[in-house]
Amino acid sequence: MAALSEKEAEAYLDARPRYPIDWYKKIAARTQDHKFAWDVGTGNGQAAIGLVEHYENVVATDINEAQLKRAIKHSKISYHHTPKNMSEDEMVALIGGENSMDLIVAAQAVHFFDLTTFYNVAKRVLRKEGGIIAIWVYNDIIISPEIDPTMKGLVDSTLPFRTPIMNLAFDSYKTLPFPFESIGMGSEGKPVRLDIPHKLSLKGFIGFLKSWQPAMKAKEQGVELVDEDLITKFEEAWGDENQVKDVYYKAHMIVGKIPEMRCESDEVSEDSNKDVSLQTDVGRKQKRRQPSDEENRQSKKQNTSEDEEC
Image (cartoon, rainbow, N blue to C red):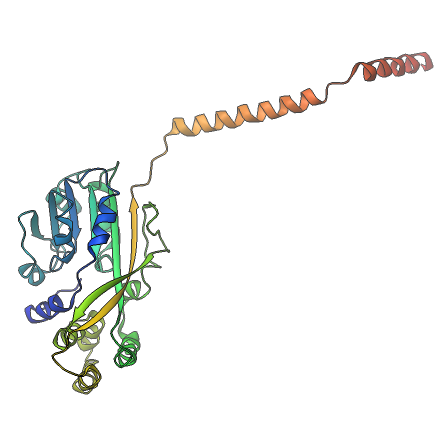
């Protein structure tokens, strides 16, 4: 994601939801081994901390140093800064080398990546057998009937400032390229719809809005979408400023694996099987066309008659 200031990163940390434990259980159950996982675009480590219950080692990387400074520390997690100028080979070596990762996770992040570079690296480090990659995004928040209409108005106001990258998230990853084979948990163009429950304070909510990428992009162009008037509307709709509300984020997920490579010998074998099948069918048809004894006798009579006429 784009670099945040330290103040913005702190607000972002307070508002970002923790992903359901059940997600990690289901994903981990689909990997063959549980030695290494890579959380790419880790941010504050929300996904990385969820992986430590299922994997022995978690490599967590991010382009944003301010986020990494506030990342959740754990003995199983190694955090690494990955600047834009890092090469694919350097990235592969940093993460763990070729065919090393049992799981790759990109939570609320892949739409910010250079997809060509990311997918190239992912295909190199992901285990060819038993390894999977999971990506997800949340793109809407449901708070209350009093607040949601104002939130929708804010979302609509971001439209002129959205980049193609942001639209990938707003489109729920339905238009995101995903060159991996489906394992039954979403697929390219068809993500799985999920919910993320979260408890949110008014302070955390306002912090989330101010650090929200579309609002920041508008601010870069001289437009303050989250201005004092809008904040006042949210405060009035919220009610008690000390109240912590139960909210949920709408999320979308796709999980896949390295596509199986078809050997040339397999294709030759399939073609040979087709030939055998075709020959068998032809043979059967020919067998069905064999004339009966009576047909043979009639044919002989007809031939004799034709000879006599000549």
